[in-house]
Image (cartoon, rainbow, N blue to C red; front, side, top):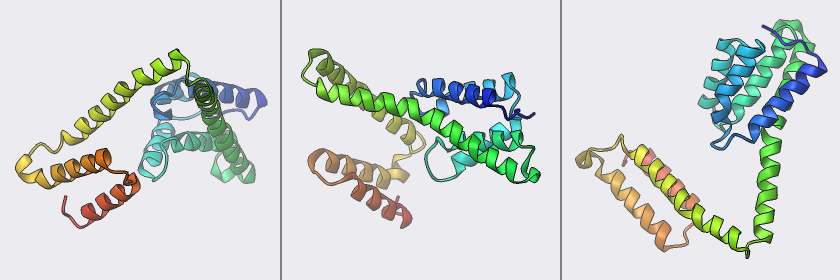
Length: 198
């Protein structure tokens, strides 16, 4: 299971990840099934274990979820170079794999987001742009509420979890009625949690 380190293979890898970048609406992790299909099933460049361990390791590490793409590129490059014991060529190809996969997954969606935001800001007075923003607001609020609801499903014992619900109500009121920066509330929540109050 190894990728031949040819320019055509690196280009194919870049183009595939670049196309996935534009489909990663919920983040890069939503494209993992297609990455698996392409890298493991279709091309055979990674093993199932390498693919799974790349995702597991990146999700356990602090940082953005997109780190799994860098680990996939790293493993792919190491495989292309003949494994870790193959010397500096394998390590150089591993770094190339990280560079190719990360640039491919980040660049198209970042350019699209930047361009769309600039266009929307320039044309904010157009009726269609105002309608889009107005229509997106309830969707975003509903998604936030749904996420909060799912996270709170584990805390359904009101007698035991009343401090958590009180903290949630206070934070909601502070966000709604004050201009207190969210980072202060996140920090306060971390302190309250570290002290074992919630």
